[in-house]
Image 1: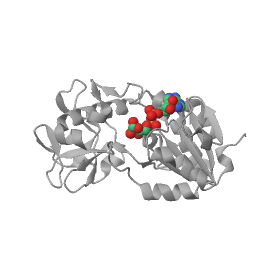
Image 2 (image 1 turned 30 degrees about the vertical axis):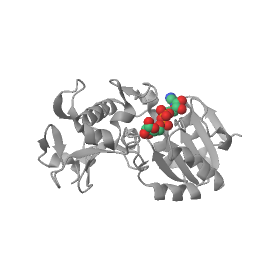
Image 3 (image 1 turned 120 degrees about the vertical axis):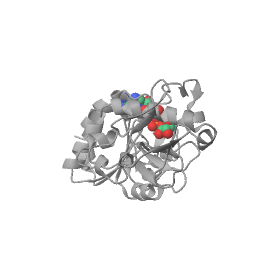
Image 4 (image 1 turned 90 degrees about the vertical axis):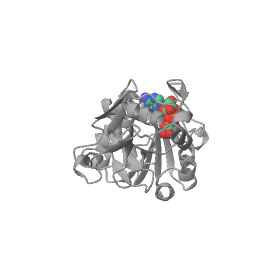
Length: 268
Ligand code: APR
């Protein structure tokens, strides 16, 4: 079946770590799920933050530094070009927290729903206010050394919620929120937490005529169930990935290979 994205009116795109692979961001699974001998599940949980918030901030500081060094690749850019020029309605949902979709999109044509949060945001643990925050609080050696990573765009830096507008206070080397002087945490959905925007996502999945999944292993729910929801509401389904995924029986067209090569062609 030779179909292209431009043949459809309402498109939902779901992206995962594979779309950023060619930008040099390794996935948890590539690294055998380990970070400095900690299982990622042991640093990316509410329990880990309660037990050792400094360790968790070290991990996310490292991820902010790495993400800031990466650049969007042709797959990120192709989605933006398509959104800017196509007559279709397009919704982008990403499980990625790396901010590369946003950094590819200087005109803001395709704002992603970041269902797992975002590395350029932090949240007050008391009142849940979300701040734009591109600090790395610890350097790559794990030393306390707050610095900016430039993960926020020039436009974001002008907004009130940009953390650098406030005088930051710290307690025990941990940043405190300007609103409540309570500890800040990364605005990331950790294992065991509920992803953001689920009601909006469900609605879009029910209404789309094309669902495209790109660079996601189909192992982590609820995103792993989106194909089924779209398919059961009569959408055509396309999967672009380097390897087969468990939901293969629900895929109409499987395009096997690297996202940076296939996405620009499918979304031409
Ligand atoms: N092009 C296309 N696909 C690729 C590429 C590439 N260049 N490189 C890797 N892939 C594929 C892999 O084969 C794999 O199937 O991308 C998929 C990435 O899978 P995961 O690492 O499991 O990433 P993802 O599906 O996004 O994980 C979901 O799990 O780790 C948690 O919260 C984290 O958001 C993440 C979620």
